Amino acid sequence: KLGLNPKHESIILMILFSFQWNNIYLCNSIKICSRNKRTFIMANSNKDNYTDIPKNYQKFVLVQSPHAISKDYGYEEEDVIYLLNLIKYEPNNEKLEDDDIQNDLGCFFNDGVCVERNIELAKYWFAKSADQGNDLARSNLADIYRKGTDGSEVNLKKSLDLYKACGLPYAHYRCGEFYEKGWGVDKNIEEAKRYYSLAYLEGHPLAKKKLKEWNFLED
Figure 1 (cartoon, rainbow, N blue to C red):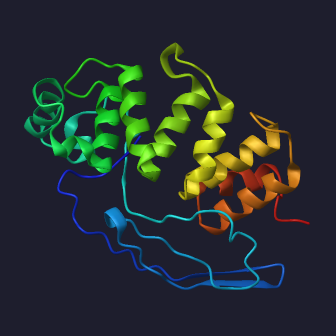
Figure 2 (figure 1 turned 90 degrees about the vertical axis):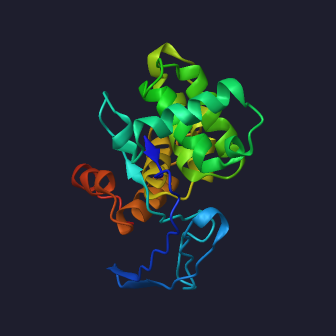
C-alpha cells in the first residue's frame, strides 16, 4: 500500500535521469507541478515514446507488511484514531476531503490499522481519493480490483483503467503486464513492451526482473 505521512510536508523531488538504449538517448528535464505537493517529470525530447503516458515521481511510503501498524505509515496511533473518529462523529469535516488523507484512510481500513479490516471501506476511501486525481489511491484501488482482495470483486478492466491513469512507475509495469497477458483488454505485445520499457527506464525493480524473463527492449 502506498501512503503519505500525516504532516504532508512539501515534497520537491529534483531528478535528472538519462538512458542509453539502442542508440536512442532520452534525457528528461524537470518541471514541477505543485498541485497537492506532487512532483511530475515530463519529457521534452521529441524522441520520447511515452508522451501519452502520465508520469509521477512523488515521494511516498511503501508498506508491504500484512501486519502494518500506524507507525509504518508515519502516523502516531492517536493521529489514526483521530481521523477514524472524524469519520464517525464529524463526517463533513473538511480534513476528510483531503485526497492524501482519504488515501491513507483507505490504507488503514485495508490493513486494519487501529480499526477492523474492511476492504469495502478501503475501496470507498481509495475511490474518493482517486476521483481527486491521487495516484497513490489509483494504484492502491487498482491492486484491489486486480487481486480481488479478501474475496472482493475482481474487475480487470477497472484495474487497468486505474493503472493507466496513474503516473507511478509501478503502474507502468502493471500496464505492461495487462497488455502482455490480455487482462481486461485485448492482448497487445507492442503496448506491453512500451509500458515495460518505460518502467525499466524508470528503474522499477519488477521491470528489471521481467527483463531477465523477456527482453522487451528488443524491437
